[in-house]
Image 1 (cartoon, helix red, strand yellow):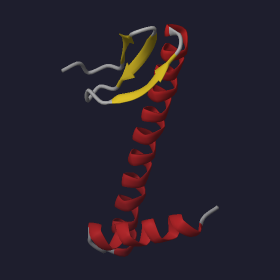
Image 2 (cartoon, helix red, strand yellow; image 1 turned 120 degrees about the vertical axis):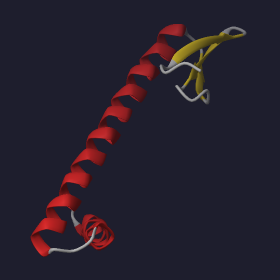
Image 3 (cartoon, rainbow, N blue to C red; image 1 turned 135 degrees about the vertical axis):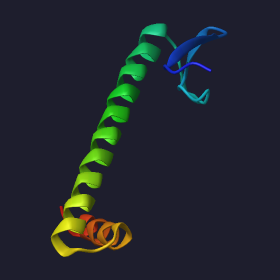
Image 4 (tube, rainbow, N blue to C red; image 1 turned 180 degrees about the horizontal axis):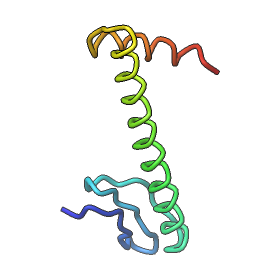
Length: 84
């Protein structure tokens, strides 16, 4: 299995396949498919960064209030729903 996004020809169109082998979408041009790969990579990066930030917040909350990870996670997740 590939660890990268890829474009596969699908008749006269082009399909984007994610690193896990799942079809993302189909486009009329290879250029459009490649642009979508860039969008997907950016979203993957934003997701990974957000995970690291949440993990850091949970760890800080654990230390500040001397609580376990599950308790800190619950507080952080609850608070994230009202921040906006």
